[in-house]
Image (cartoon, rainbow, N blue to C red; front, side, top):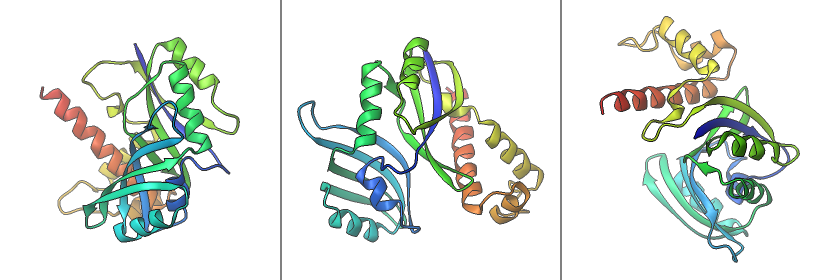
Length: 223
């Protein structure tokens, strides 16, 4: 059994209604999709569970104003929360999930949003046979860019995402060299961003993902 972690990118289409509602608000960030699926095979509703960061009151307001959102609930504190939402089908996510079902691909949740050089994409880890993964990639809708991050044998109980991408390894090496992990810290997101010619917000997102992967790998080694 194999796994493939890929980043999908697209323009001009919404992934889901929540993607459209939150995508133009700089104060709100959708960090990951913990789950998304049709309510039932013969229904036109989808259910979605999101991990968000930002003004939770504004998130509630945007969802309440959306004509495509049927039901929602927001829970959390400070500027982090989880959103449960039901909405009518959106074309792109419907197509992507149909491809996964057709080729009997299992998703290793969550799907994580990533920002690289100002562009936004969705990182997905798919589990299945090599042939199924290849066929699913070949069937992606026109206009969907796909970037392979990692590929290998799937081992139950081990997070395949624990392996950093080349970009993340470069950023991590610079962060260590510049003293980001010293106590007290000797550099900042902004200073690292200037060295790497990236936006400070992009550096922050990458460092969060690097730290999560390192923590997962460490926890796995202790079992």
